[in-house]
Amino acid sequence: MFSATTLVFLGLAAVGSSHMIMNTPPPYKVDNSPLLANGADFPCKNTFTGGSGTTSMAIGSVQPLKFTGGATHGGGSCQISVTYDTTITKSSTWKVIHSIEGGCPVQNQAGNIGEDANALDPDTYSFTVPSALPTGTATLAWTWFNKIGNREMYMNCAPISITAGTSKRDEEEDLMARNITQLVERDQAAYNALPNMFVANVGNGCGTQDSKDLLFPNAGDSVETLTGSSTGSLATPTGNCQAAVAGSSPAATATGAGSSAAPSALPAVSASPASSPAASSSLPGGVFATVPTSGQASATAPAVSETPATSAPAAVPTSVASSPVSVPAASPASSASTPAGTGTTGSGTAIAAGTACSPEGLWNCIGGTSFQQCASGTWSVATQMAAGTQCTAGQSTTLNMSASGAKGKRVVGHARRMNAQRY
Image 1 (cartoon, one colour):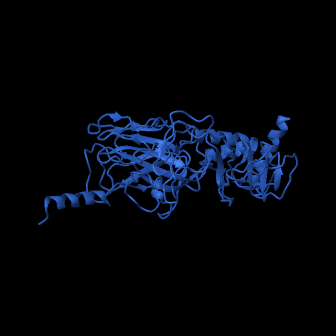
Image 2 (tube, helix red, strand yellow):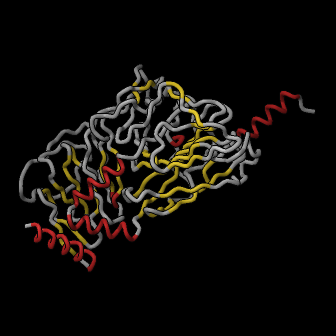
Image 3 (cartoon, helix red, strand yellow):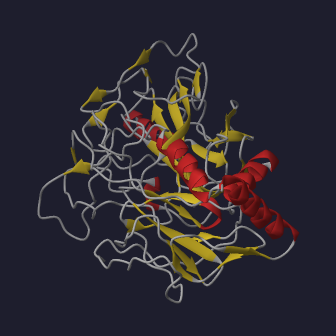
């Protein structure tokens, strides 16, 4: 015979073990618990391994979003966000591509739908991959702010590969032939324009209201509002949190001695944007990634900063190729400049992303198969050349391309015709 206290404890344990988790797209190693209240395991519960592999998502495609579990906590509000960072940290920038306000991950449910951790959520959702997103390897995050229960933030992350549809590939090939810089600027602007992921209930001074569906300060352009008869009205967040300013890289600062085991300051949305967009660069295959502008602050209790760190945008060369290229990790401490010149110089070795350089616009062709550019005073991350093309190794004020194969000859031929028409 169990006591009433024991039965309550067992009931809570059952619910606790049946928290909701994203099953489609497949996340990294399964962990259905919420983020820690102090944010020590933000983002993604520090889990970036395991799972069933990478999900390929074509630009413009509609992707399913499904969940498993029974502890739905009356639903709530969710976001789908993307980062292109290869090494994800607390200071990584996540950009929102879809928001669901109310009714997520369950609709018209006052509490939980059951205690079975393996039960499939009866409600399914979907989102569209924005047509302006850069292609390449990325990480997708599903974040959830539950309506009923403890004030928590859930976050599941999944490895994805964003690929170009036929129209996107044709457009990129045409733009690359016309002007690589035009493609760089377009993709950088499109990504920076997306709102930052909303972060709360993780010790960053921002919270959500109990028994209310969250109204995101900046939900973006792709928004579903699923408030029904049992969800009630939407409510704004509480505490020191403002709208996620598109184009800014929110950061939090804190003081304290800290230690190697102490969590870094968590990102907190800012009341005003930085003077310029967060520095960004492209990764192999057109992957677009943020470049940290400073070292991470150590903290024992994250505090919100009213003004995000200022940084300058870096060039984001994007190519239609998808083969990975190995490049050195960014070295913020490095300050060596690249010599100016008009001809091709050097052997064309990769330079650490973020290293100071000059003159502005200088290209560095690495072994003929990838390139990087000096933009806003620093080197971008190396990017793979388009399929069937190669560049002349070394540094030059122009990116000299040659072709092999039908596709490569078409790209280079188009570029030469455009140059001939221009002059």
